Image (tube, rainbow, N blue to C red; front, side, top):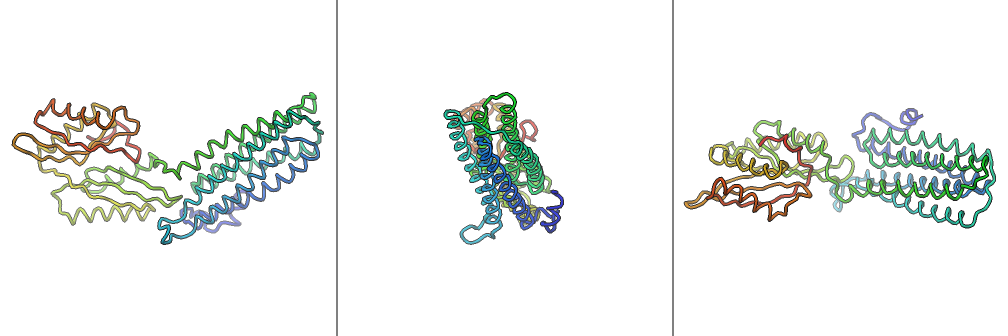
Length: 397
């Protein structure tokens, strides 16, 4: 069924990097969710009213919220495809993230409403009429939701959409919650135990618990989530592969929505090289990344390589700094030599949650350097990384 729907509604189905194709997949998922959830909601409301089961009605309300979520996701994909304009030069792709957040909030609201109605059922119980029709509707609901989970998971992985992956997990949660309601109905039928209200409580708590993860997943890119470590390492290694590049640092990646990423980075090259040649290499790097969908802005850092003293000091201080913590790195080291002392100027990059304050780290580095070279005065700028630092111990010093 999944393959058939994709063939019928998606043109150029394999060209998932095309924003229009990606949007088409998102819209298809939205319409599938709307139609399926409305059918499930109608069937469960009928079964719930016939049997008087609050847990079945609660499950129906959950499907209604899922239908609303699908409408919001559909709207999010539609708005996200808008082109950039003067007010939003980076485009509108973050609407997809925003729609995911709204969906998560709706799930929380529905969860609290179900919790309230189930508690009322426990306090003021009413008999539940067993119906094989209700059992059949719940069984069919589980099978349909299982297919929806597999469908959204397949499409979500295909276009790398966190919204659709979250929708798939929501369908999985619905399978579990509906199975719980089905078991409650069967247990009540054969043991006379009235578990309807209690099962409604469990379903509501499960919905609320799962909504926490959905909310975090939706909020993270909106708040400025750190780029994936695999992505940043791939960018770093690719830049280092160009002739003349000695090092790279200060990478920043900004996520403006799926397939809308911008980045900036510093690239170190020998100061003795011809400036126009170095600039040409940088232009080539930027164009190559842009061709692959990443708008990369590069800042050129000239590094003195002909001064043996500066080179030795650079490697020596890098080792001293690494002795404090192997995740610490330095860059942009230069020296201003004087008759009585020499200023050694450099930047030091620290990971988040580092155990020392900036002032303590500066003092410790200065102490270690002056133990070796008492006439060296360290002028240190502390930087905090905006991207995952490469694995400690695997970098060249």
